[in-house]
Amino acid sequence: AQSVAQPEDQVNVAEGNPLTVKCTYSVSGNPYLFWYVQYPNRGLQFLLKYITGDNLVKGSYGFEAEFNKSQTSFHLKKPSALVSDSALYFCAAFYGNNRLAFGKGNQVVVIP
Amino acid sequence: KAGVTQTPRYLIKTRGQQVTLSCSPISGHRSVSWYQQTPGQGLQFLFEYFSETQRNKGNFPGRFSGRQFSNSRSEMNVSTLELGDSALYLCASSISGTSAGTDTQYFGPGTRLTVL
Image (tube, rainbow over all chains, first blue to last red):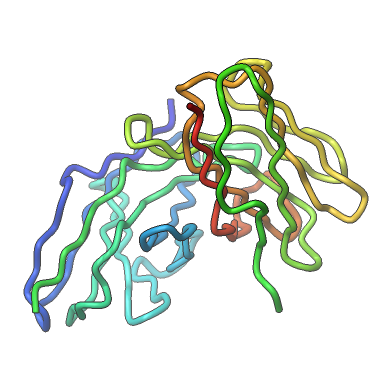
């Protein structure tokens, strides 16, 4: 079965420090992977996706993600976190027929 | 270009009632998917429509249904509401809905349904 794991419930980081949100996946076939962010009382906003090509994917708002096939990981990163990055982050994997399987989400708290 | 819109944003219903939620996709997008978000279960796929046809369905009871119109707008209906149906219902659209998975799904703000 296709699945996505986000092992940490909450990630705390000081403003200006690097931010990493972890994601591992288990899918059959080629993995198509996505990151979304959700602010309170809002829907999900698309950040970036990996389909094929370079393992380092650049997305919106300074975020990037590194695809690692051997470790089946797709960690989200930002070199310097902002307080406004505090939100809920979801990793997702395509698992056929236009469906996405989501991880449980990670709450990111950026401390001023 | 306008994003995905959902109406209403908030709904309060009582057990046993039924509810209809509406979703207007991004202009030119033909695929619409629905997801349920709850604190306990996270985000779960409900169903997906493309060209007025339901192509895929998640593991939800038959009380959950939907449809898509010729202009790609979609509605979902929940009949005989239960307390456990309280959730944020999210709609997402993608441009072609190819089963290859390369399309990005863009989400609306959601409808917050509370069942009392």
